[in-house]
Length: 195
Image (cartoon, rainbow, N blue to C red; front, side, top):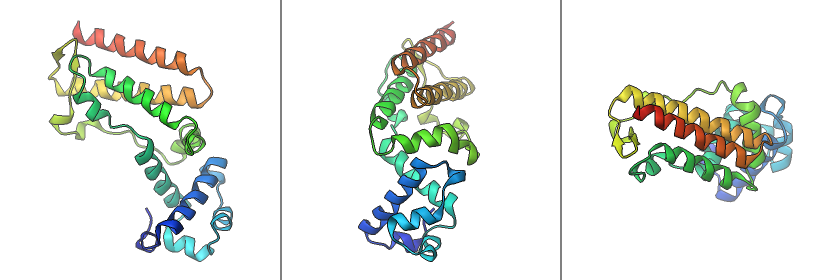
């Protein structure tokens, strides 16, 4: 993550560096990214780059977190607002994310992340076991599911399917079909939970 030196920069300078990082990581996989292009694009010295970030991976993590804050959707807030079908929240969040990402300044960056960089970073899957009970909400056909293991497993597989849907769309797949397949999968999971 960025150092205090970077955080002490004025907002314009921080954005100048951020924009150069976005450009580099949108145009190149992380393994092919170069500090030389970044510093040239934002007109800083190489030494300054290393005063701001530990290395190129550190700068990438900063950009990824910042992008996700701008385009991600709070699925947990949506879960609370779904009185009869919690899994619909995963669909709403996925559709929202795809639409917000589309034609944004971050679409190509996120495409590179989903298709390549998450594997180079050894992305760790979110562990729903660490969620507090008030976030573990699962309602199917108006019935509240209370078994924690069932909820955690359902969240895990719904999230994996959501991410695969996003990956399919970013890889040029048919968005309408991908979202339809995802919706049908969520319906199948729902049916399995009530039987």
